[in-house]
Structure formats: C-alpha cells, structure tokens
Length: 466
Ligand code: GDG
Image (cartoon, rainbow, N blue to C red; front, side, top):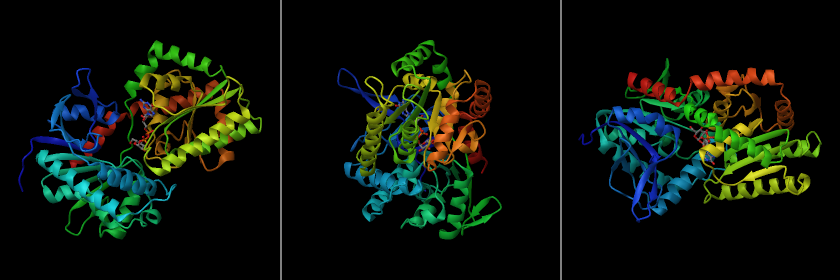
C-alpha cells in the first residue's frame, strides 16, 4: 500500500462542482456550480484540506489538478465514447430507469457495463492517489457504485461513505440487473451506505443478503470477512438560507407580482418545476389539469398551470420521446382551452436563474410536485422555504422521498390516480387561508430545521463514528 495523497477528506462524484467559463481574452477559469451539495461540504473541505474528484463535463478534458475556493479539484478524464457508454448508457439508460420503478424499460448492454466498470476503476484510482492515510472518502450517487469496493482494494486504510441520491429499488426490480451481485458488492465496499428513505436502506439490506452473502446482524450487514457495513437513511435537503434570502428580496417579490400579471392575473397559479424527466410525472399532472378544464371544474381565466421543464439528457432516446409527448399534451390543452394571449398551460422548456425561480415559487398558489418516483425532490423543499408568507399549498406525490418528511403539511397524492389528483388539486386551490397557514407552518418547521448542512453533519458524523 502506498499513501501518496494529502487530503484527509475526499469527495468523489461524477461531476466536479465547477463549471468552466471562458473569459474575453480566451483564457478559461472555473466558477463554482450553484449546487447545494458543494455548499454544504465546503466548510468540511476547508477544515480537512479537502479534495473533490470528478469529471469536468467536457469530453477528453483532462486538466491537471487545480485549486479553487479552498478545494483541490482532481479532474477525471472521460472520452466521448465513455460518455456515451458509461454515462448516457449504463448510468442514464440502465440504472436510472431500473432504480425508478422501470417507468421506462432499462436497457442492458454488456459494452455499457464494461465502460461503467472501467470508468469506476479510474475514479477509484484517482481517489486513492489523493487521499491521505486514514482519510474519509465520501462517494456520490449511482454513476459510481463500484468505487467503494475498488477503492477499498487499493486503500484499506480509508473510511469510505457512499450516498445514493436516487431511489434504491426492491428485489423484484433490482433482480433484473445482470450485474446485480457486482453492484451490491461494489456498494458493500463502503463502511456506510446512505439512502434518501428508510425503505431504500432496507431494500439494500435484503438484496445484500440475497445476492451478496451479507448477513444482517442487529443494525449492520456483516460480510464473510467479518467487516461491517451500515445502511441507513439520511434524507437530503436544501440550503434553506439561500432560498429564504431570495424570497425576502423586494425585487424578487416584485417580479412574482409581475409574473402573475403576465400570465393574465388568474385566481390560481399552479406551478411545476422539474428537469424534463419521465420520472417527474409531468404527463400525469397535465392530464389531471386538462381534465379539470374539460369538465369545467376550472376555467382558463381562473387557473393556469406554469410548467418549467428544464432541458435534460437530450441525447438519451427516452428523453426525446418524453419531450414530444409532453409538448403534444401541452399543445392539445392550449389548443382546446386557450384563447389569444391566454394559454392555459405556460410551458417553459428552458432553465432559469435562481432569482427567477424563486419569483415563480412566490407567484404559485399551488406547487404541484407529482413524480412517479423521486429520490427526494428538492423543489418541494424550496417551495416551502420560499413561503415565509405562510401562503400557498404543496401537492406532493407519495412516491417522492420528500413525502416521508412533508406528509403532514402537504397534500399527498398518488399520481397514477388521476381522479384523486384532480380532487386534491381543487382542494389545494380552494384552501382557506387559515388552513394554508397551519399546513405551511408544519412544512416550514421541518424544512428549516433540517437543511443541507444538517444532512452533511449527520452523515459525516455517522461515518466518522464507525
Ligand atoms: C436528484 C434526484 C434528489 C430546476 N430547474 C432549474 C433549477 N432547478 C433546480 C431545482 C432543484 C434542482 O434543480 C432539482 O432537484 P430535484 O431534487 O428536484 O431533482 P433531480 O435533479 O432529479 O435530483 C432527486 C436530488 O438528486 C438531490 O439528492 O432530490 O430525487 O433525482 O434544486 O430548483 N435551478 C435553476 N434553474 C432552473 O431552471 N437555477
């Protein structure tokens, strides 16, 4: 074993937490990406001489390690072919649909798996090189499930944590995967495997017992060599402060009022904000809204739906089909019920800056979060954080991880039950202010006391305690 690195805390993720920006004189610099994860981990990075191992986001791009914002960044190169096979293929067309209830049929291709293995090996080597002796290494998400074991083989001295941001499926679905044993053994290389929901942790425990010769003893999985692995839920959250600050900004509030006018000053604004992904239940939401209009339960003067659908994974076929389906549905609803200057659905296929997003949250009377399956869903928590005015209602799918925490104050729905969703959307629209306030207080109590810094502290404390 050779210990070459100096970082006592190493994050390993598919992407580095920075974006390349080109300056006018042709040079490039890096800007920290806005994600909550990097913000939550930044203090830990500073305190422990931290390093972050990940891909820059561009093919064949392998700059030397560099530092920014008190973090050492260690780029892992990916070729265009590896991006197609490991990232778009195995990660986003095999694992993503398999882990989200097979909403879309997962594809199993051996050459995708080979690329996934090779890339995971490369990430593991990069982490092994940068980690100091006995360092803590924190690996993120479904693209890197083999890294815990590969890294342990290279560096048995390390303390290894893993967090899965997406759901972990039950045996009936996971068992389809031709490489199920390898994935489980990959994850079992960690000391701590974190999930969004308790149900996901127990799915993992029973799968590890069935397919990977682990035994559940008390709270831990015990492996053949006697090593113990802890699987537990750590529901992720958001930077509450960031959203609250924007929501308190008079310009953002003014913009919310302007948005209301721009969509025709209806009585009710319903809002959806999602990556354009088939897991998010956008079609089911549109169906429910369209039927309410068709049945005259609401008129387009009374209620509009604003749907932000951020472009996502546009090179993966299922996402192209989804875009067509959603846009067809929007076009039908607007064709049937819209009038000149007054569409019923305001569909926005683009991405917005944070302040515009928060203005939308403030303008929305009903936030409609109806995924068919979602690890957590941060948008639900962002809505709650924005509503210091204690107004608005949250309609939330029971299949989002957030439902475990927000079930009391939100209106929970089964997005497959279109009639149920229609009833709930109407109830949420017509909510009395006193009840809205009561519900929003419950929601805000939970979210404000459990922000992402608390998540980071809890999972890293649990890891260090092992
Ligand atoms: C995965 C899991 C889990 C969206 N549009 C814009 C924009 N956003 C921001 C939202 C939110 C984030 O992106 C999306 O987070 P979600 O949680 O809703 O969903 P995924 O992207 O699928 O995330 C999920 C999450 O990981 C964390 O563990 O919760 O279950 O699938 O913050 O506000 N941000 C900006 N412009 C946009 O147009 N700036």
